[in-house]
Length: 433
Image (cartoon, rainbow, N blue to C red; front, side, top):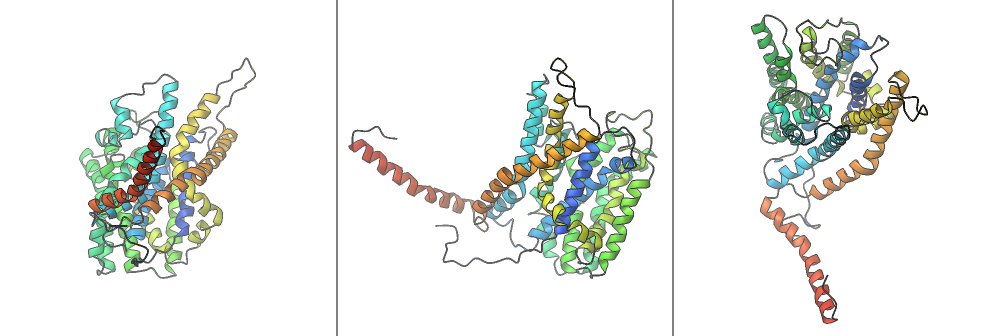
């Protein structure tokens, strides 16, 4: 077929990147951490409460892993931004499933909010569905609140073929120190605005300031770039097998600090959301994510060496299998929770006793969430995603006119067949189709 490789033409094979299964397991635990932060009952008190407040450490790890895996999977591929076909192939592979689930989550939340009488048609809702609302107002109050992360991730994915990929490809011959300094620069770009504002305030940030250093999409781009730089560092200077033990020590220390460090009390003039967990985004918690970034990056680097006990634990088959559902678990937790809210009050003339939000009900909610997401992935999202990948696999290296010409020729035989059928029908006195 014109413009696309034929069966007789050999295609250049790019070595496949090694699968880092422990990151799939890490995604499972991180998604459960985030769901527990959002949905777990706050009474009675628990020894895990401080850990749940510090969920932004997990969000930071998610953003860095996105950059790390993007560079790990595509860093060795040449020219992903050299043609319209290559760009279209990259974007569909990165964005299709993510946008599918994001729109499903926002659509379900918007529908449930409309059913209870809330306004649905507004410029705010339109901005949420276009993923531009957080550029103007970073407050994470779209119909599906977790979708702010998708809006923050999109610019990094869109710019990767034009910025990070060529930058890291041209620097492939550089040594360990170059990528180390580049990673340090990315981290300073991420935490720098917070430190500058704190210096100007001579104190912690207020809520309006914090929204712009965390939820505003450009604020997350250095964190994504940091993960990509660490992946390039692994490629150029692979860690020794014994480095994994150092990574275990660092990540274990970080988890311990998240568990035992005190949680600050909200000040009297704090204007952040009152229904969020106490202490979240307040005082030193404003720096928790970015201060953890070097430790998370160190673990990402060291765990790629193969001798990490934590990486082996995270590579357990159950955690790895559930890791394929984490995108859906993260983005569909809110609509399912809204459904449970409908079932909370008693009714039915006393036949329905209600569904109080306690730990037992939350455990049931989490089980249903995982099961529904698993079914959706296995029977809807992943089959569609694989179909899209198959459709776009031959686009790389071709210009837009070539793609349009090949698509037109692909459907010409079908059009000719329909024309011949119409002529045959007309000769028999039948109406054309």
